[in-house]
Length: 321
Image (cartoon, rainbow, N blue to C red):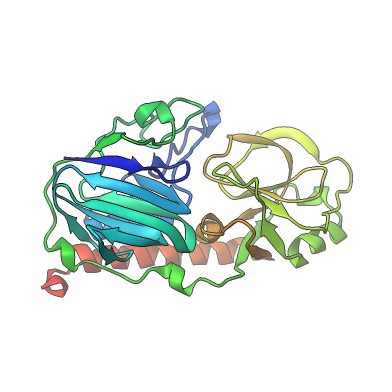
């Protein structure tokens, strides 16, 4: 079972949850920019929630199913057609041999995921199938997917009544100017009070340099340091917000390095990383400071939501009849 790429998306690659727990060895995590969207697609398909999918950016591309398969699109809402019939995100579809999946520009959001039942047949490296071009890890030695590439899929048991599986795309309810919640630190004391107020009260835009490695914020307001913006390099996590000498924030994302040498004013909570992943170039956002306890409570609610969704779709058979 396999899929052939006829037209590529922008810098598309295969991504799962990434290489977690290896940062202490200097190994970048990589992984999906919007982990929530990937999880949702895999739950609908009955896959493991961390199964790899094709990460698509802005324009989805064109694909040929070389065998019968079941698939889901999640995340960005593309103008999508299967065999010239319009389809939508967050719903399982059956593709027959020779069917063409066409994904035009994203109407809502920025990054989407194409996942298949059983997942893609790719050798794992450090417990992950994620592509990383710098390390040469993943399918095709980590490079972006190209025209005529063929991705094999696992020929596994198909869960009961896949075509009845669908849910609402949460992006439909996303605000045009999202509030990104953060926990202040780890170098909060490196900034003046005025600098912290500037950080929390400024409306930023997603800069044109933004990519999988980082969101480069744009603003005319500069965050004030007490002294130097440089520090001895220390660990950088998904969502770390660095502030270099320019005073303009850089939010480290899934493709970041494992360490950073600029002062870190805050860290984005895990619940809101998907909002940044789906923010289009030039779109606006603001930051809001919350406590560690609030962040933990929000994280618990998020995990409970996914657990309930998984149980309803994959265990509640009566709901699928």
